[in-house]
Length: 390
Image 1 (cartoon, rainbow, N blue to C red):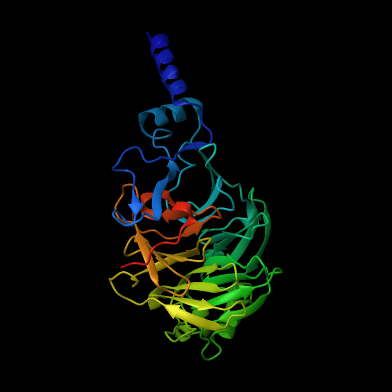
Image 2: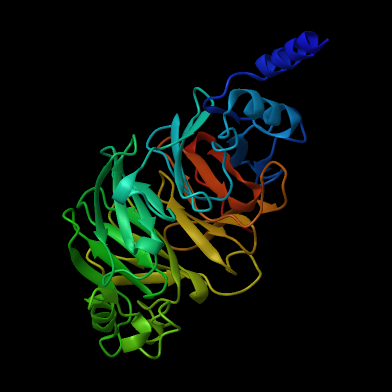
């Protein structure tokens, strides 16, 4: 009897498959209800829902997963899954990289194999809380690490190459974008209320935003070790909220920021900044000169409530994730609203506190659907220009 029971259990485990890289649900629209397009008929559709990337729930969970862990000793069955995806980068249409701050991991989504694995970043190079993510088009990935107050550079397999910024330079780096022509990395620092530019060696070469009363030098001084222990920012900079916010740098005038949270660089080198609590997008030239701004606080199309990630499509249109509206708004380069897609929910094309996004060269739009624990994919139809919103 015991032998028969054991045989049945082992057969059940075998039917579940061997542990390994988690498979992904990459669902294609299956019926009329799932075929989501924007704008809806009778307007000409410009964006369609193309599926989602997430770990399937039938591996590692429930009774079957518990049995596998019991009999195989494998306790990592739930390790390879998205929990809180924060940002995305894809330099082609088959491999997608995703940061997951909740797990302190950078994942690789292989669309062709429908597999998910985490990069083995170890030692001093491992980011404590990977947030912003981008690439330079030459095989290098840039990952912001707010607790480490730095940006980590790795190759596609997770091998540590270098880091820049660090204590005394950055305070809360949340996003990064690379100008592939100049090699300049633009970093959004939410608590410095600034955008900082670093060259290919990691040297700080430019700072955008308000700097009142030499606040940044106070950060540098406060971050220096003293007698083998680090003084806190508050010891020197009393007006800061603890060590978390340089209040003097907050501003709402053109060229100033209030919790900037997203950066993107156009093909021509213009820098687009998602200026979080100023509820706008600011645009700067390649050399950092203020050019224009668009957007404002509100609850109508074209307004923002909590703008987060920002990206540009192959035509130069600007896509902005709004975490409060749970949608993506699309603007032309001058700031005219063209289209919105997405809404609050858990179904196909619906979002729940989204954060980052990326658009690859073939017009695939990836959105980090954070609290739905997935990456949603949308496709630009024929790379056509979205129609102006009515």
